Image (tube, rainbow over all chains, first blue to last red; front, side, top):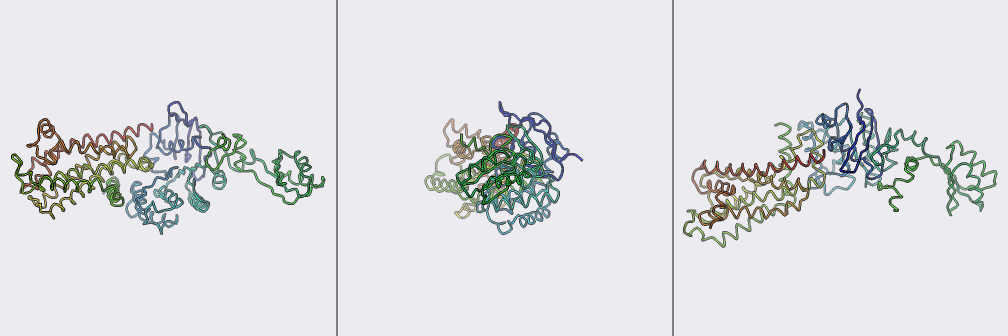
Length: 320
Length: 260
């Protein structure tokens, strides 16, 4: 069985700029794959190539075994796409847009109507089905965009930053629909700047930076390999400096004025008891203890030396 | 109905809805020609008594086809602007990522412009009837007028679509509409060719819009449909279509090439 998404040495140049620089992908059917990276890393360009909207300058890409250039028509029948820019006509209603999208996917009138009603219900848009898009909230528009990408019952769904700008409730609603679709067998290729989103949804993640995939794996593996468990303790007496000194032997220590001392444990979670014992033996009184598991942000930090902020840029770049 | 025709039909209906839901889009198609109609018939109502003016029951009967032509050519402006907005918003990508011929986005828009043009023609025809114009060739003549106006709108709409796709900006389309007046003033839309001075008369004679307006005027002024005049009008639509629609598909081809 061919990979749901395959890319080999995919490249895309715009004049002197190389937006995608030798991307390799092998994504199995039924996987949720998250593509992570800062703005301008090449995420959207890769999506546009895989969805036949842009031709690669070099390399090969296939969807379920069909070449995105030579067999673009078949690829378009197999995929659903929700691009980064929510592309809706503000003067149309969700019902009209879904009818049009159904016709674009060559569905019969009856089948298009059945799927339209099902999607409106499932994505909690039924009550607003006859309102104009301009009257819908940002979250509803995103859900409508998602509904439109699903009308053709795609085998492979491409979601380019599907929750950017959404409030937490709407974001979770989109996540829940993505999980439901994936449970039904849909392969999902998701680009996101939210590390938590990738952590919550993806079976595998790929970090792309300057057009190249720099790291790939399951979130758990990457966090285990690249991230560090953090032990956070609140010192209740005045032995703050003593605590820092004791914990320094377990890893890199950060401290602030509010009596919290944080240590990134070199040996991970198993080192927690030993660290606590060391504080106890030095008569450091501890009020609160928090053990923080590594996150994908730690992975990103290890990889780039910087955090990824919610706007898709790196914090260092933002400061600059 | 094939899947492609269904999409074209839905897009044509979408154009009409857009026009109705955003009334300012209808201003060039309905308001401007209405102002022209009132101003021209009011100010130049005695023109038919000029020596050399073709025999007409009333100046309105002569003027109405010109106004219908103005409305159908101006339908290209809101239609083209809406297409430019589709480009700006990325709505066109929906068509490009769907299993449909990519040209369908343009075909559907042109069908929509044609439908808006035909409906505008029908509206002005009704206004004319209310104010005493009679379509001498009967209901079939009225159908010829409406269909010819719709085809003209679609053909001329090609130019608007070409600008929209080429630039991706609605302001360029809006800025192009003085061109419509330039072309119309050098035709027999508002004044008979016989009374124009040279070189305006020569330009008007060779202007496809003259052939079209003559084709619109003929069923209103004559008791039967004159096939040669209608054929010449269709020829005019064909020339406009070749230039307009051809440019639109070429612009689309270029835009798609740019993504290669």
